[in-house]
Length: 227
Image 1: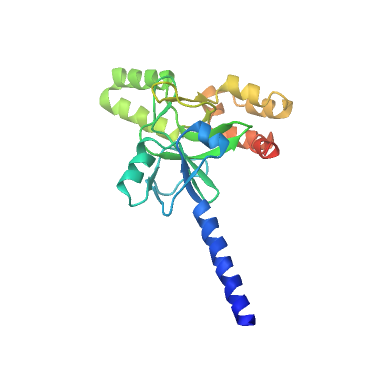
Image 2: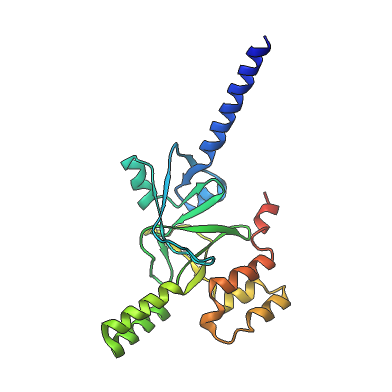
């Protein structure tokens, strides 16, 4: 009798572990699904990072998600909004747009911030970045353009996702620039002072400077209080 009970307890324990493991591999189709917790479970998922020796604040759409199932892999590449693996959130960058420019295929790590937003780190894009690359190409040719592109890859900045896709399936994102950062830490005079101590705007908005200040402001913990 005792042995039978042990077997039942052991079986239930294995079942709970399996359920927990399944819950750690899932994806959602849209930003709205993400907010509402509407996830679809996956039996298997493989995360491949296409960059080695990552620095602490380095981001980018450098992750690929595969399952071994062609139909599911196609969904994860083109349609899915996010993947959750254990406690790590990955956001699909394929449809993200800043000033009508995108990052291309691949996933970037994301963090919940505030009550309804997600923060990702990626390279600097947009109109200013395009102008800089054009001017380098105009003045110094292909070599200058290539150098500028390389510098932009290294200039890791923060973007905020706080809305779903438009009619074209594109998801608008916002760069954490001076103006947005000012709003996010408006109640923290000490952090605001620390942020603007850096006189060069291009260095002020780097992820390695922005994220520690947002952590000090407690913005990554706010959403937990509303659950």
